[in-house]
Image (cartoon, rainbow over all chains, first blue to last red; front, side):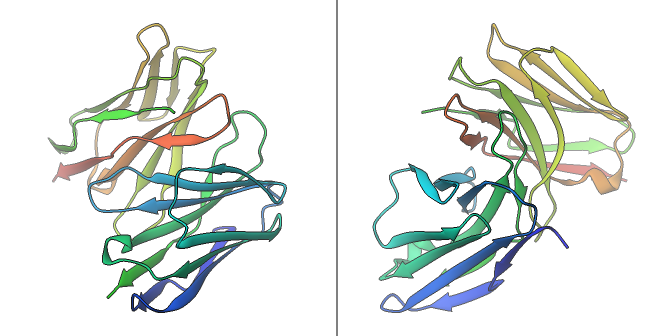
Length: 113
Length: 111
């Protein structure tokens, strides 16, 4: 049990599909994040939510749409993706206080065909 | 925004030898520097961190050093073991409380 649970673990979707990634944290944290991990690239920060309010949108294309209904759940809605969007999408949470570490989920491996 | 550079991208060492990974950052307001280890097919996990008010921290075989003036920090692993083989990421927390990662170092410990 990682404390941060992501579903699904693997997802294959066509470019015209609409799908959603789900993240749930059981750690009582206040801040949740979406990161994208591609081969040979750093972990790219996508979105940050602090107490359900989006505090960071790191120039992410609009085909990625986040949703944070409460401080324990985070979604990433996907539509009309491109093959280059294939990557591992990692959710993380933190306490939100200065210098609090991130706890990652196991990620969703997304393949866009 | 913050720019974190990490070197080397790959590192191979003999079991028992030491490994050193170096990172630099650009935002002088960054004040927290964690290191994550990611094994194949698994999530990144925090292994050690250092805050800007100290220059060095050690936890058994792992140590981190921080030079705020030069804006660089390093991970040192001594007496390496095969299970240390993984990808290691450095990161820097900005003043806006966002964590930016380096590109990762693939460490291979040869038995």
